[in-house]
Length: 282
Image: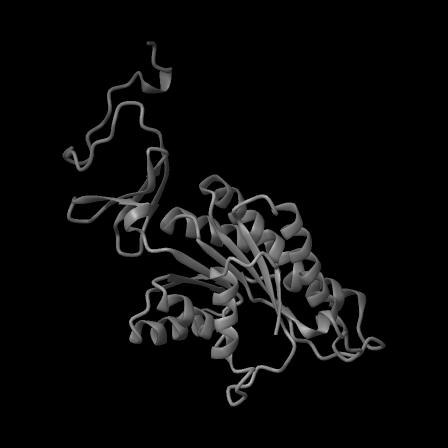
């Protein structure tokens, strides 16, 4: 076989050659990423998961059987987000958090780490499609396909319908609804390929009872409900589970029904239940 001209020159030795890993003939290495630890992460179609080559030049194959399932929470916050993270971590999940405020994300990660929970964070504004796509590419390159995606982002704007503007409605819609589409499109193909996965969307009572003083959020929660409904109908014959938790109350830690911990339990039920209903009105 004739090699392209670019390979005609003899290679220049920059560092002493050393074999650190071997793969079968014709193995196609799909992705390469440098982890924060300095380890090199490779994925290929022969291994579901990948291969990590450590700085000490050891390597280990990571397969589905020894990879921790991953729950990705978009729109991470100290209320429902942290409660959902803790609930899924109780079942052995690692947590990936997405939000736009790095300082807060670092705080959440430190809190979870102190509780013995493995978590990773990625910066992305829920209204920025490019940032979301970049974040999910990093997540999948480093940790594989998420088992669970939870879209929890929203702009809780209090503004009357007579005062709101075109730009306000459009900009809020990006985070309230369109960002969910971007996240779903980022993970759904891989979930379909693996024939497993759950996508949960945070809904709200405003989708059922819209309020004039929260017109933007009412439109957003109505959009989330329609998105969950149509996606569920489209994937009804698929093993991929689609759901939305329609929260019809104000989150309050002192409320026995609407505390974040109690609400997080509903997300877990929706994920783990064999019930075919896509919506849980709470």
